Image 1: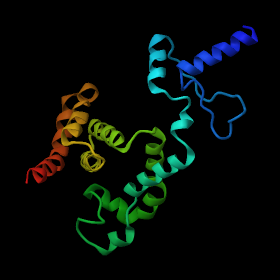
Image 2 (image 1 turned 90 degrees about the vertical axis):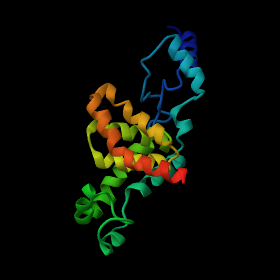
Image 3 (image 1 turned 135 degrees about the vertical axis):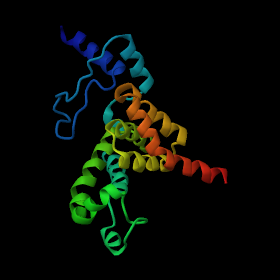
Length: 201
């Protein structure tokens, strides 16, 4: 392929496939692609036009990403001083299954576990509501009741409706079977029903 044709092909590719190339800060300007989209054809072209995104970096500027990460971090960290001053449940206390972890390894949780999840969530580029709905579905499929309850509440805080949370959990039936969907819905229901009853009042 001669240079003219090669340049034309790159132009067409970047127009139709906005994620054809993504360069990290260290590789920017080096000309080395970090990621290549394998999907080609009319469907990919349509998706490219609909997204109207030139590069992944345009939707995730460094400061925007840092702010998104920090907002997630505030949800995962625990106030250890408040936790140790109080007993039982309530403000400052996690779900019962996490209480021993936070009591004995709270500093480790805040310095390593919470940032790990905050980084994952921030890297997705998804809005908080979408991430929490996905989290509800994944935790239901995994079979963790604590996670389902906690993230159902977080999904509601992020603007999801109770029915949207139920719908996300229902989706687990496709990969986890009836058991995953039914138990997930049962775990989330007290959280969702409490919100619905408060609205009715």
